[in-house]
Length: 234
Image 1 (spheres, helix red, strand yellow):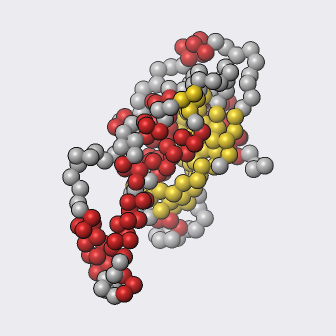
Image 2 (tube, one colour):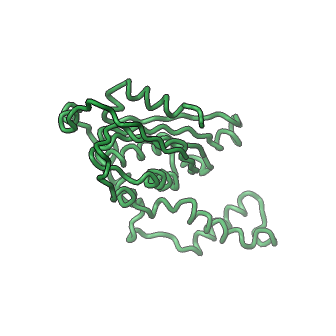
Image 3 (cartoon, one colour):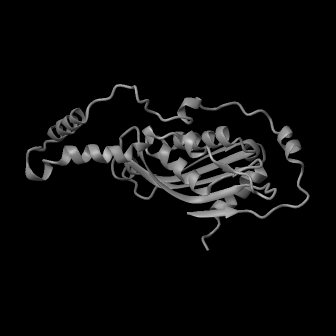
């Protein structure tokens, strides 16, 4: 994972003046999708025993015998794996970005973190898709710790997802919570629901992007973001 920070520009415009020129940005997603944990503590849930019984039923469905030695503990292991793979439902994105830092020495360019590796699960087939996220934002006076953007990516990735929705949620959360001058998110991923089943096209990569604020309104900033994302590794 590379963190890239551009150098300071000279003759910068007044921050308040620059902000005033940006058009009002309406919310593009329901805030409940990215400001809080997806599962409330008071929401009824099946017991662990019921979840393990459901796995046993699926083993019977595919033609297996759950009582054989190799499968005796499989229902327990699958439920434990689900607890890990889908822990994002119980984590709050807003809490990850709640601490910022003001010592920026007047920094006015965007901050880019590229090559954030992630693994998620397709909501259509419950099969993995994995790849890299590239995130940039232009701060207003305060910045967030770089690791927080990677943690934010993991929170949304550890839920049943589509790549398009994952991209939109990451951008919306940063835009709403940090209120920067702009956000850019690009995700590239391979989907096993396409590479190991169905058309079985191994190696096909899907790209999605989302831009807000100055990245959405200024093609030059989009191009600069994309060129830095595609720059070769050093």
